[in-house]
Length: 403
Ligand SMILES: Cc1cc2nc3c(=O)[nH]c(=O)nc-3n(C[C@H](O)[C@H](O)[C@H](O)COP(=O)(O)OP(=O)(O)OC[C@H]3O[C@@H](n4cnc5c(N)ncnc54)[C@H](O)[C@@H]3O)c2cc1C
Image (cartoon, rainbow, N blue to C red):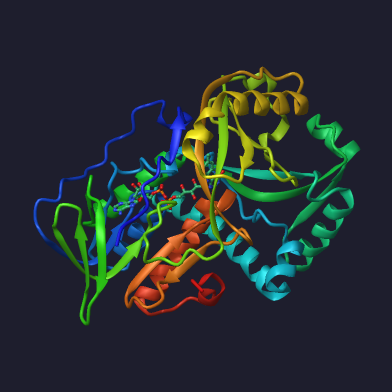
């Protein structure tokens, strides 16, 4: 059994521009036994490790890269409860009841992430932001009206903004938008390192670089074997390997696509009022946010292929087209890229993740967070996996289960 190997990202993500604060990790020199083995030291592994150490389990995390060097530092980290697929569209795929459940769970995860991060004192440039969902080719003005009703029915505070509202309040010339409240922006690298460090404070260990190449549940434990033959015995194993999927995890409905993002130079005086998160109801969609030091991070232009060479070859042209779109929306800003990067991206037919027990593998769990809500779903995963391992269960287990 092996995990896919990918070149997950290329170029210069903004979050890797500065050296990270320290994190302790070791080489794995011997066989090891632990309550929970977590494969992957990205944001998913970090949140799961923090949750399970708090619940009193001994935890070891293994990564074939150094900690937080996979997809997580490429994230633009708009931490939104609004799922990529509009609520009234999702209802057509999975039924109204389940679609509302998924949206509500996503909201709960964003709220929990905010509160827990604050409670733990993790410093990660986290800031509450409202969001603007702007009319595009997926939802025009009429479509946004429908989405407004669906969101209000499900209990989400949402406001409709007309072209006049958008012009006068934000200087944006689009037909309409929905405004949602209490989303978050953060530095994803610091966020993940912060959670890993909390887990370490409670006794967790990180081993890197360690590639796990074999996993087998046995009658009393789970055996994992590393590339160089070390044995990891655990009561439970959590696979949080991001977009490098192990071959024992079902991949039905899963696709890897390509995406591009950039960050401008700081320009505090030119940013839009309220600095809310902005994304378009379009496919592919353009999205943007600002940073603590006044830069604009903007991304999108997704394409449905996974070939990494092709993805990287398009970095320059995609950067230029994202900059053009940014300038069209905000003519006064300086549309030049200080950082530009490309990444692979998991997507599913509904925009929802798969999280939970791996079919046919007792005491083994996997996390496949998808799309623009990847980090929100990592939080759902942390709550859900903790519930399954501790035995308290989770009311949404069926919603995200591997099928
Ligand atoms: C350009 C871009 C923009 C994004 N923007 C957003 C956004 O605005 N909001 C949002 O919520 N999400 C966003 N995402 C998605 C989000 O970043 C991801 O969902 C999230 O970072 C995934 O975290 P992870 O921990 O699951 O994976 P990773 O961070 O990739 O961590 C998985 C780790 O597993 C390790 N691994 C793999 N196989 C093995 C093995 N066999 N043995 C040991 N270790 C292994 C890898 O080395 C890796 O370090 C974005 C992603 C990209 C690329």
